[in-house]
Image 1 (cartoon, rainbow, N blue to C red):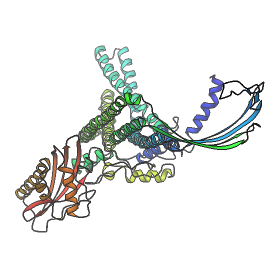
Image 2 (tube, helix red, strand yellow):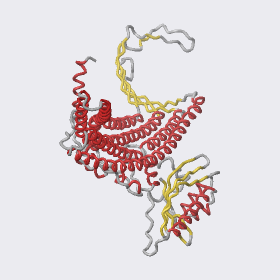
Image 3 (tube, rainbow, N blue to C red):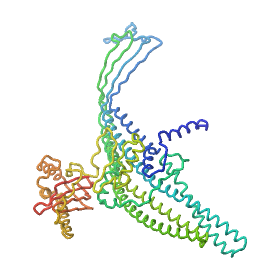
Image 4 (spheres, one colour):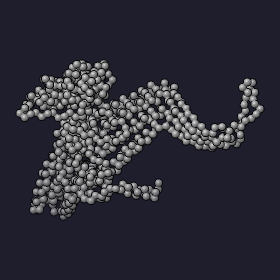
Length: 635
């Protein structure tokens, strides 16, 4: 394309990128910057369009299950008559008469409907896979949103540092240039020792180099932020004058087990692997369906204007049975390929589960280190500010050289820069932890909300503590699609082999009555008893001892069954047929008060052909001196 052809398209694209974008009318706060990024960022818009495209593909895939209805119309012509002869069936002689059986030209028409049972089954499984791909697109959009908010936080504080330091850097560079000019003049006039003058100049040049590198680093901050929030690049952003302070310690008050539960339930990468595993399993069913014979139903209405036909319009119908005999040879290979895809998807899911748990622990540790580094940088900044103020007073009294003024001013600027850099690292670490936990602000549709409304919602739920309350993980908002609901995370055993859950979260233990607070030794003894009861329960399950297993529960425990007897009958039917069961527990957390205890732990379940890991919550109560399970939850 020529520049003349590209010009109008480029201009139209630039206008389209700013269409509907509210102008920045005042100082930009962090909440508004995040809201602008969520509403106007071009990459985020592209991810939302990808999700919308996946929705449309799902709608189209549903039509694959419909029959095919074909309309036909045509015209036929030949240059001579269609003449035929007949042969006598008794003696085999040809008739001497010739017969014309068709017009030279005639019109044809018809309406045919064909419905293939194989196409119906393949279309059904294909629509299920496409529904999962819609959910995968939604998870990719969520991941992109997490990364976008992380980048905006980092860029915002870099821009705030640039705004704070811009004037100071410029003034200090001018002071250093003036001092360098005086020193060179002094050197030329031989007023002082040339070696001292050169050393003086070198120290000034070192400070100038440091100041210029700081200036270069900060000069791009506003452009990066403007790009993320889709603001005009030529506009100088004014950052709101806010107090740079450390994040609160709320996240460190949240139990690690709760954070792990949130990761396993909400992490976008992990949820994507769950959906990919389900797509792989459905592909196995599609492969199996292709191996079955096909039955096709046909019906049609025909018309032919040929004058030699007695009946020029008619209907016809039929049933066709077909089977590819080579499927007998290729079928086992195709099934092995599909099953290998399922095994690969499961392995990727398990690897991703371990990876996201590791990332969560690393992100939490990084946040703690970043907070400590910011506190140290803030203390250093306060000291350097006091030194700079004293040096400024001495310079006013003409008892301070320009070199000392430049050096101390450079140190103060560098200290403030490191303070803002440390704050940016804190914000980035918190954003990384939020992204790893798969949490996001509770916001509505960015297309329907105004910028002010979106900013308020981001401000209300902007911190990690707001998104994740202690002891309670908030699940992400999934896309609404016409697809089967996502089952319990595949890391948990199916209902056929695991105890059903009675509630989503175990209720809090009943508080200890006043005056009955347990001493540390009593509390430790209680936790030891609870842990022993839990281990006995797992051991009974592992050895398939139904009497000991049932005795670990309260007498009226029924799970989701109608009664305790029905629950016990179901569990017996699911446990006893297994040749081998192994239940391992780890990361056990116990909160015990009086005669109630709440436990959370990681459970690894292995049976004949199944190995899964899940997070389990259990509530126990002490009855007749024994700790018994009264509530059980799988996550």
